[in-house]
Length: 387
Image (tube, rainbow, N blue to C red; front, side, top):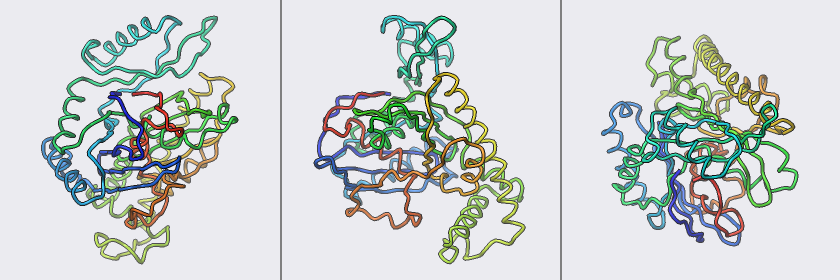
């Protein structure tokens, strides 16, 4: 989205991922191409504060300051991202033309679609590729847009924590950047990998290919379905609060993963009876089927638009990627191999302790990792990409 000059150093900027229900901060170090986690911390956001903008901002600022003071973060340079709910993303198709003409047409289109000011507001784009439409060849573009006031408030919040913002990124690009290191083989240029981040309120879908000097994004979709909808459906069927539904879902996940003997205090060490377990399963399955259909539509759009491109696999990240019911539905409905992400795989993590995450995959850290890596492409050179 917005970027100031980034210098590639051994110590990367702090990657700050402020989501709907958690704050994640991570800082990476790079030495001879080897990546180390220098510091990392995660704080849960109480759902009760999300309805009050000022209370939420105050809580976030306070917690970030606490993480900075108690952690081993070096410096105050930060790269953050706008939440999905504050950013408009859509695909556009424009006739061939000069770069200046494309940008002018794009700004006009964004202003009309989203009610933005083409002169003042933040509008940027990626060239996804060329597509044939009838007899004409057109540019397939991915548009990113948000209003100037949203950017201003985000920067003000960061500055209130004494952080120095170097760039404001977006969730899809950070997600893709987190994994594009694994897409550098020659054959990766012809194979598309789908990266899916299942969060609290949104699911982000990114189609991309790799290459020797980095990767290219060809399609992005924001789907307004996530863990919160799983909880709402469960709460409605059981006649309980959303917070209670979340606890029950977590209890069921722990029982299935074999960690039932280590339940949190919130569950009071209780296991679930068969009827409650079935209601939760049915509730999550209904929403999972909806999400799978939406992701399937993304596959359809991509294969029709970019004919001949082969989709190899789908890699799932985000806090809700641990939901086994969702993964089982996706495996039945999607025509590709499904796998869980490991965004910190191969990193030296001797300096940090992720003990609070007993699942080991750490797939909810993908966006934060991608933020900290912005500006580095694996060869100690400045990375060219969406900003």
